[in-house]
Amino acid sequence: MTIQRSSGVLLHPTSLPGPYGIGTLGEQARHFVDWLAGAGQRYWQVMPLGPTGFGDSPYQAFSAFAGNPYLIDLDTLRSEGLLGDAILADLPGFSSERVDFGLQYVWRNGVLRQAYGAFQEGLTPHLKADFEAFRAAEAEWLDDYALFMALKDAHGGEAWSGWAPALRDREPEALQKARTELAVQIERVQFTQFLFFRQWSALRSYARARGVEIIGDIPIFVALDSSDAWANREQFYFDDRGQPTVVAGVPPDYFSETGQLWGNPLYRWDVMAEDGFAWWIKRFQGSLKLYDLIRLDHFRGLAGYWEIPYPAETAVRGQWVPARGYEMLEAVREALGGVPIIAEDLGVITPDVEKLRDDFGLPGMAVLQFAFGGGDFSVNDFLPHNLKVNQVVYTGTHDNDTSRGWWVHADEQERHNFRVYTSSNPSEETFAWQLTELAFGSRANLAVVPLQDLLNLGSEDRMNLPGTTGPQNWTWRADASGFSSELAGQVRELTQRTGR
Image (cartoon, rainbow, N blue to C red):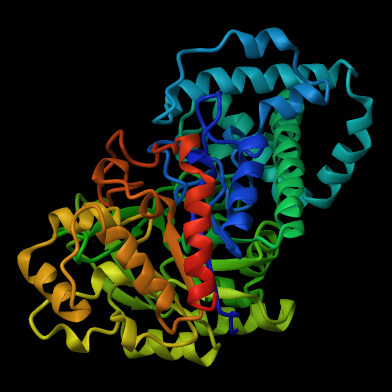
C-alpha cells in the first residue's frame, strides 16, 4: 500500500474539549474536523475506540469490536429525545483539563441508562428499526459482548475468570439462563453500542465530506478481561480455570529498563490457523467499519512476540516466540483484498519483521524523537534523510513525551546532534515547531504530529507514560482556544510548502 503525500494530526477523541468531562463524538469533534480541513490536513489519527476498563488504557478494551460508551455525545441524545434538559443541567464538577474516568463510569453510565429507559418507553420510535437492524448486522460479536458486560456488571465488575465455573466455561445451559435473567441489561448494552456506532458513522461521514480520513488502531493483542478472550478461549493460552499460562509484553527498551508487562493473553496461532484465521478476518472487517487506514500496533508481534510466564512482576524474564503473522495477513488479503495497513514497526526490529512488512508492501513508522541519540547518529534510520518514501513519520507518538518536553529533558549529546544536523540552536519555545517542519519536509509520504506538538505543550500534557498506571495517563484534554485560525493558517502554509 502506498499513501499519497499528505499529513495529519494525532488526537484521541477523549481529549477533545466539551462540557461533560470527556471528549465526545458531537459538536466539538465536528469543530476539530473543520479545523483539520482548514489547516489542510488529510488525516485525523485516533487511538483504539473500544470500551476501557481498569487503567483506562484504550489498548486494554473489554472488546476488540465494541465502541467506548464514554464517547457518546449527550447533546445529540437530547436532540433525539432520549434525554431531558434537567439531567444535563445538573453536572458534577468536571475538569476541563483532565478526564476523570471514575466519575465518568458513575455519572455517564447513569445518564446512558436513562437514555435506554426513554427508548424502552417508546419515546423514540424512529430509532427502533435502525436498532434492530444494527443488532442483526453485528450479532456475531455484539451478542457475546452484551452478555459479557451484563454478567460482568452482575458480578460487581469481577473478571470473567472469577465467575462461577459454568459461566466462566460458557456452559450452554448457564449462558441461556443468564440471557433470560439479564435480558434487559443485555439489550441496554446493545442499545448503547447502537448509539456509539450511529454517532461514529455520522462523524466519519462528516469528516469524509471535508476531505478528512480517519487513521485508527488495531492493538495486536486483546485484553485479558475481555469478551474476546472469554468467548474465544480456545484460541488463547489459558488453563482450565481461565488463567493465562503466558502473557504478552516487550523486553527492556528505550521506554523501560524492566520492559513492559502488558499482561494480555497470547494467541494460539496453531488453533487460529485451523479455521483460516477467521477471528482476525472479522477483526479487520470490524476495523474497516471505523477507519480509513489501520495502524497495526506492535506489528513486530506478528513475526515474533515476547512471551512472559504467568504470573510475573516484570517483563524481564521472557523469550521470543515466532508467530504466524504471514499466514494471517495472507488470509486477510485473500478474504478482504488490499487492507490499508500501517505497520507500527517500532522497538526491537529484526530482519523477519522487515520482511513481513515489505512482502506485504506496508508502510512502517519513524519517530523523529528517536533520531538523534548516540555518538555516530548519522546512520540512524529515523533521521529525515534516511526515511523511506513509503513510510509514516511522527514527531512523537502517544507513548512519547511531547516534543517540547523531549527537548527539555534530552541529554546534551542528543541536543548537540540535533544542532549539528540542523545547523540551528532551537529554544524550548521553538523546538516542537522545528521538529514538525522536519517531519513535514521529509521524504516520507505521510507525516503525523500529535496535537500537543502543534500547541507547543510540555511534558505535563503528554498522553501516556508507558509502564506506569498513573493518573496522568490517557486523561489529557485540549483547550478549545487551541484550535485557532492562526494556528490552522500556520499549519496549512507548512503543508502547502512541503507538498502535502
